[in-house]
Length: 417
Image (cartoon, rainbow, N blue to C red; front, side):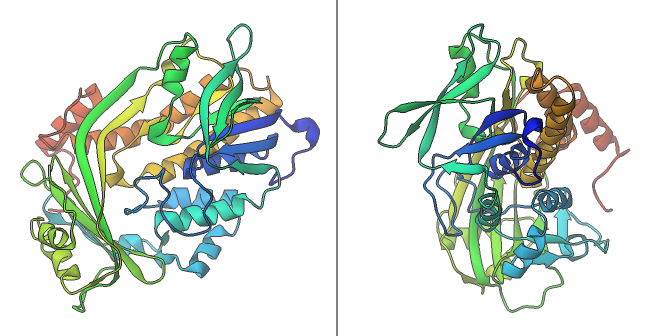
């Protein structure tokens, strides 16, 4: 327990988190203040290196921790931002140092006097995990899969989980709360149907997005007036883009992207050739004489998916779904990790309320409604942008339709004319 609630204030003896993702680790940190024991079920092997995990297929690509997420992270793990900077994270004046080409126009740089830290996802994950393991009532079960949920006699609440450690028999764990932070691999929807519940309604918008990334030791020696570079596609005529961001140990993460592009670049030659097809030559010029450190890694993101657990009734209590298992955003907008941080704080507030009111009764519905409110605006922003591409397939909400009309009429614009 990080802040030492008195034993009488604990909401329960044991909480289980499915998935050691950033979302799962932040959830575990919050839960450690409210439960005597917190167990993280992680299907990957334990690793002491800053390398992408097999279960995080997007781990080799560019990630952004927005300022809100950074502040929450430092609140949950005091001093971690200074530790990250000391270990190699880059402190960046993102607003003042970003060269951003958006819909064919260069955005004006703005020196806001506010910095963020930048690093690779594996580097960030490793440091969060290191701090989490210092909390005495948090433990990991590696190479372990969650198999199914257990319910009480009248099937109104979750009271356990069945797990399987590689090479061993199934094991039942009795719990007071289960948090599903398993990301795109979440099985909660299927488990609910097995228990006789309905699956949650799902909103899906297909974008057929790919990422292709490569880390560079150095860029071309030409002068540059930016610390971050982003060339966003200019739909509908242009559906390709890319970015360059600094990461730990004075390296650069170069990520190319495309909506509805069937053949992502897989080799170094294809990677460089792809940069020539972007709306601006800046990324090509930055890497043409650069020194790559890694091979090209490709990640496909077929669709945005939002599961409406907040609307599902009946729903077994003491089960919470969060992170990408609750809603998968378009990763181009860099909101995922910060949304997970905001959800962790929302979870904390609901648990605090539970301490002073009715315990864990109705914790699921209250928390899912809080998560839904957090997601509403980022979801609208992502869809408004994604529906500019002709390849996007899905049903527009009334709000995305209104936003599209307003933007087209010129009453609202994201451009700097």
